[in-house]
Length: 165
Image (cartoon, helix red, strand yellow):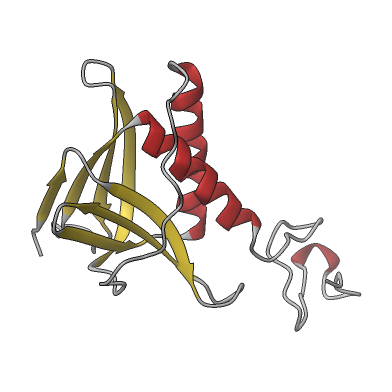
């Protein structure tokens, strides 16, 4: 697949989940006019993007009014799975640019989306993403893997007395 999406001024960008903690599907969704792009994103990617966005926003002028959080729109079925994400700041346009590439097998070319968002959208997305990541299962204090209510076999305990939730 070689599909390209260039959204230079999205109306909205959100990150959301579908499903209960431990089985959540993370989605990044962006809309510009009639175009709605929904992509599957991993929890770790959400956390890293939130951190980068927060750092960029913090280093620039204080953003104006943040957009209100919005739920996912249809289609909620992801077009593709995100592989790599690049984040940069364009001072000329005062926009934060996310370049998102499809996860594909080595040697194949995939879809690319270029999302150019405002500092306000970036700040709101960073807040929303951080809240979603923190709302998941708590990490094991020994290994950092998520604790599961059904049990956790921590590799740091060699199978002896796994931590309880």
